[in-house]
Image (cartoon, rainbow, N blue to C red; front, side):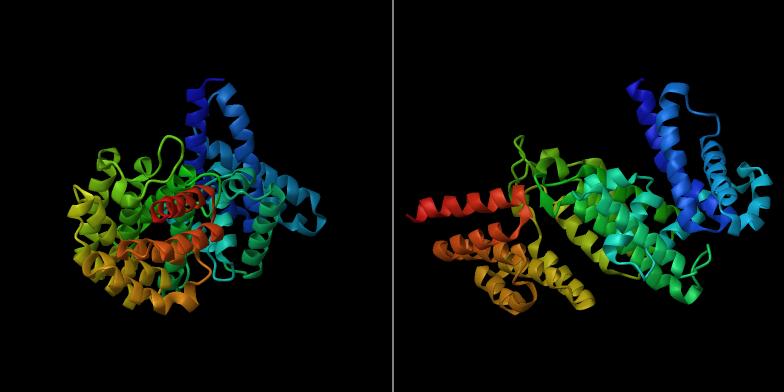
Length: 408
C-alpha cells in the first residue's frame, strides 16, 4: 500500500463526507441511521481504496455503498418495509449538484441548540469532518466508548428535535450560525492549546477547524464574521511552529522566533480581515482577528502596538462580557500603563476566574513585572497545580523555580 495513495484517499474521504451524508439524509430522511451508514461506507473506502484504487466517482461510490447499508437496515426492520421502494432508485441521483449548501445544513444540524458544546463538537467532527469515533476519542483523550456514547446521545437529540433536513428558518439563521462558528472555534482552540495531556497542541484538530471554516466561507462568502473567524484562526495558527522547542517546551509569544512564523498564513489572514472589516459590520471574531494581526505583523515583540491592542480588547469586552477577554485586556493594560494597571483589573476577575490557571499565571507574570518575586512564585505554583496541560504545567513550575533561585 503506497503512502501517497493512502493519504490521497484520506483527503478525498474528508472532502466527500458531508456531501455523501447530505445525499443519504435527503434520500432516506433519518439523520442518525444515515450517519452510521456513511461511516460504514467511509471505513470500507479507507480499507479498499488504497489497495484497489480510488474509483472514478468517489462521491457516487460512497453514496451507493451507504445507500446499500440503509437499504439493508430498512429490509431488516419490518416496521419500515413501506419505505423499501426507496431502494430502487439509483443512489448517484441523490448527489446534490453542489455540496456547499448541504454541508452548511449539516453543520446547522450538528450544532443544534439542544446539544451541549461537547456533543456538537463530536457530532460535527464525525458527520461533517468524516473522522471516525476512534479518531475523535483519541483527539480528546477519552475512551472510544465514552465518545461513542456522546455521539449517540447527540444524534438522538437531533432526531428528537424533528428538524427537517434544510436550512433553518430565516429568523433563526443568525443565532444558529453563531453556534456553528462557536463550535468550529472551540475545535480550533482545543487543537491549538490542548486543555489536557502531554502535548501543547494537536495540529490535526486546528487544521480540521480551519478546513471547516473554509467550508462555511464557501457557502457564505459575504458574511464578515465567517471571514473574521477564518482570519483569526489563520493568524493564530501561523505561530504554531514557533510555540514549542524541540523538546516540546512552551515558548511564550514574546520569546518566539518570528522567522518561524508562517508568512503565507499571516498574509492570507490579514487580507481576509481587511475584506471583512470593509463590510462595516464588526463582530467579535473580527476584533479578535485584528488583535492577532497586530501581533502577527510586528517585526519584533517590542514593536507590538499594545495601545491599539488595549483599545481592541476594550471593544471586545464591551461586546462579549467574556472574562477571558478581560484577562487579556489586563495584560495589554500592563504593557501600556505598567503592571499595577493590569493587576488592578485582575481584582475584578477573582470571583469569575479564580479556579482557572490562566488568571493565576497572568497575575504571576504581572507580579514579576512589578518586582514582587515572592508573590509571583506563589501564583506560578497555584497556576501549575490548576492546569491539566503538562507542557503548561512544566513551564509554570519552571518559572516558579527560576524566580525562587533568584529570590533566594
